[in-house]
Image (tube, rainbow, N blue to C red; front, side, top):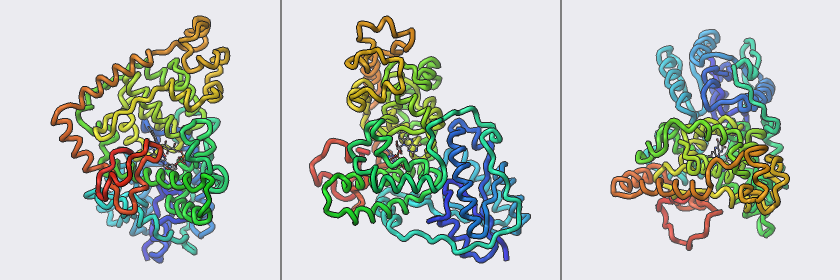
Length: 512
Ligand SMILES: Cc1cc2nc3c(=O)[nH]c(=O)nc-3n(C[C@H](O)[C@H](O)[C@H](O)COP(=O)(O)OP(=O)(O)OC[C@H]3O[C@@H](n4cnc5c(N)ncnc54)[C@H](O)[C@@H]3O)c2cc1C
């Protein structure tokens, strides 16, 4: 009987893993494989912090698979060469993997794998990622379909696997993959055990204040689930996460202490994950081209290098922006609101193209997920044509989200001597001459003036029938619908409330 190779990518778990479960039903030998592809890790969006998270996750996955009878084989090399060698050596007739919604590089690699498999007479079976549909024709009914999938039972862990005799291979370290120096002392630890620990503490302790605290970079670090790298690399399945939340909600039924609202907000965000990933799955060019063509040449494609560098290193002279960037660089994580603000400042105040700033953020995120990242980069840069233009005021954000100044001062200790009232605007303080341009940079733009100029330039493009015609097409293709029963997962529960029943079933929701 021919063997089956299970190719692990962003699904580093044995629990609720449809690819592994399917392989186990084939009845022959099973080869679980992960390929560390140097070319993938040489891409502009990859970083050592991400790899270290993956390497830790692989070590646990290897142990879990070994307990089932087939330890994980890890190979460093080009995907087709590795697969060809293993398939020939072990009489493999089928490769099974979950569908990956990756970057353009992985999309091209998958096409190479598919071409090779056809030629080699090997069947490549890809099973759907939970919630994201390949070759989707229309968004109508998508949300309901996703919800049905999430409600289904989890696929069981195979009772046992019959492995093969083969060198399991060492898990490479960042140097083996030629990854650049990337210190990240506060990085989240990889592996399912760490993911389960975060999940448990979120559900039983940390999550109660989630809805209120998520917008603050300091409180949000504790109150947010912190599951993003685990969902991105698949050490936890979104379905198992949602099942646990549903059970917890049932337990809390009738309580009025904030828990239920917080858990509903969390469920909505896990649904957004699929909503955004579906956009990139449907249109992979979102990584490199503005969704609305009117914006293609809005900003210079070659960014101002001094502005880009100042933004990347937290040296813009705008305290809250610098604090957020420095925190991200050191920890690999930032809450949603502050990610959006960093992009907004880069794209509007600093007038940098999102294609120049997106790779840096991707590298800094341990949880880099192309399907969330690129649609969000465009949305926060105002290039989708389907979302309202939102320009964050970084001074106001600092005052609102860090009222005590503790977060700003923790990451910008140079500002310690600045009186509280001027912490977010040190340039307005009469002692500024002693500090700015010496120990802390003077702001590289006038915040209010830069925002005004950007708003005028961005809105000027939104006029005329041609603009609106294309925008309508984009909305049809990508906007969420309020499918009956599923709609509440796709609303922004932090946006100002709209009157009820304004959006009948099937209506497009542009507010995400
Ligand atoms: C410019 C930009 C880039 C982003 N890039 C990424 C990325 O590469 N990877 C990533 O996981 N998230 C990304 N996000 C979304 C969001 O900021 C993070 O998912 C969140 O901060 C992760 O922390 P958490 O797990 O504690 O989130 P929680 O608030 O606890 O949310 C739970 C889960 O829901 C999903 N989620 C939360 N917010 C969003 C959102 N706005 N859109 C889609 N899914 C969401 C994530 O999977 C998250 O883990 C990006 C946001 C912006 C504005």
